[in-house]
Amino acid sequence: MEIINKLLVKLHHCQGISWKMIDRLLKEDPTLQLEKIPSFISSISPTMEKEIVKTIHSHHVEEQLIQYRYNQIHPITFFDPLYPPFLKEIYQPPWVLYAKGDLELLQSKRKLAIVDSRLATSYSTKVIKRLMKELVEEKITIVSGLAHGVDSIAHKLAIENGGKTIGVIAGGIFHIYPKESIQLAGDMMKHHLVISEYPPLTKPLKWQFPMRNRIISGLSNGTLVVEAKKKSGSLITANFAVNEGRDVFAVPGNIFSPYSDGPNELIQQGAKPVLEAKDILEEWKHISE
Image (cartoon, rainbow, N blue to C red; front, side):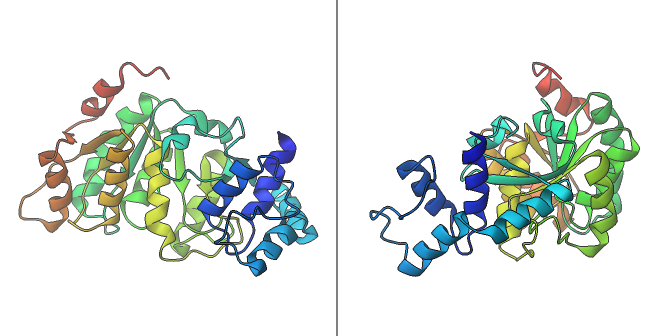
């Protein structure tokens, strides 16, 4: 299995390869001894076929893997025992996770995703402060996206209260975005965890951020939306959670504030309103730590 994991990581570095291509290649040849691409995959051009075979046997990719080990970045494939079981249940689970930090956090039994507007209002900040102490006392691992606003606040407050936290980023670990999160990410890589579904040298692109949200919700037992406008990444994350059969929590807010439109609408649709930490904790009494 170790050989298959390494070959899958190398295949994952192939420029232009898609999730579906890897899926079909694995179904046709689970050992990934790809000397010739299966003919039934008509969507693969001769150029792409050569690129895939070249990447599998590439010394350059091998050198990159050595660099990852030197930087204590761990590629965790879908078939690795460390891969989080919850994540296997989502739409297009990542074939590889690139992780740096405390890998045991991936196996935390109770993980809560906290998402919000990138503009942290005084209201959302107060809400997170009110909830966080009790959440981490109950060994809830906090998952968020290391972005501006409540993402960063949630990570920081989890740490300040003695809890554990996981940051899921778009782009690779060598290209933390935004720059304001670099120090926080560095601290988390030492004592907590930062993960990405992209090889570490990948620069973040706009389309990667909404795709990243499926991992935030997919890692977690539930997602808490504090504030969000009607069209926001937070609601994308909440919708992923719904589709994955996970809990969705929302903090009710001022009906005159556009930042409350998202959570108030989620509550109308059946999300559980959260006024204090016990509203979340009582839903998870049956989940052992």
